[in-house]
Image 1 (cartoon, rainbow, N blue to C red):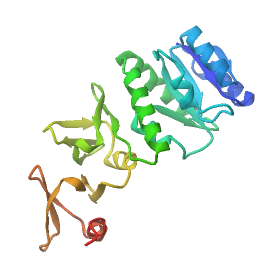
Image 2 (image 1 turned 90 degrees about the horizontal axis):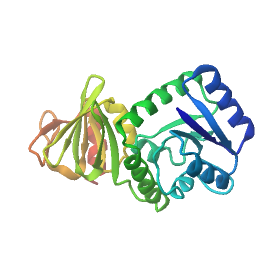
Image 3 (image 1 turned 90 degrees about the vertical axis):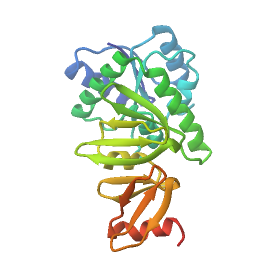
Image 4 (image 1 turned 180 degrees about the horizontal axis):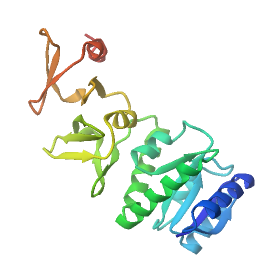
Length: 249
């Protein structure tokens, strides 16, 4: 696999290249770039399979670099020393990232996922979702689309289509307003961490719901909600007050 490293810190790019050479012999580093302009030129000329891309460079962000690439046929793994800006948008797009200092185990896992993504050829759509969501992030708006990892690859859905998510051991079933049910290779906790809190609410250990689809609140011995797909979901005692607060009741 042919790889380009983009990082404005020379030491960081050297350390990453050293880790790759030592632990992932399948990767051939064909270029390292410390400036955004050089990175754009190198990517367009060399046409790599994978780019390790720093999020914050002096001249522009890694996201802006991607906007300058006319034809994206490579996978991306973002690298960053920060754990906040843009990471939710990256997660929504099912694109990998590594926090500095980069751990060998995390590097290996990210590489294995990149191989799988390249095989399924879903790169362009993932980057498109990422750039859409970065724009919304800059405008302080909620994200529109999310990439869901399934056994067949990635499924891209509008977040407003999601009615509810239900835990199934280390997997999650996601129910859409189209009637479709998607089995996702993530725990409910991982799915919950992807979403902005509103309009999604974790009402039970096993259930995350979109409150926009609540049709009725039932205040009986056990508090529950009925959704617009006529599913009744139990609300735990611990989550009842949080849900009521979301409705300003």
